[in-house]
Image 1: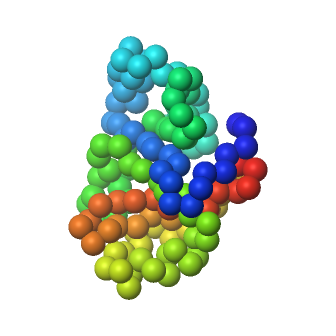
Image 2: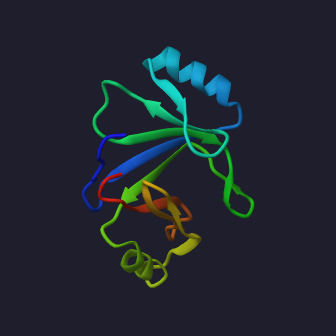
Length: 130
């Protein structure tokens, strides 16, 4: 992967959650010409969108970030300059942390939160050479 340094506050990644990964790949390949490459854990694919602007994308096995709350639709991850400082603001602003930070080697450190309306949102401090 080429260097990836999204600016603070930009939507830097989206993922599509699906129960039927093969069916989802066939749909998006037929609809948009997207290609899929296995990457990382089982059930996770990077999406190659050759004509799209610089933004990472993935197709992944559906999961629950919070108990009983299956991920549906597209999910977004926003780039942040300082993950720890950003997480410190979540609870005082009425949100909640639903996944503590985890490091994805060669990519960055990721955490998940819910906004006050219950919407899930990923925040990622990217490695400078991700």
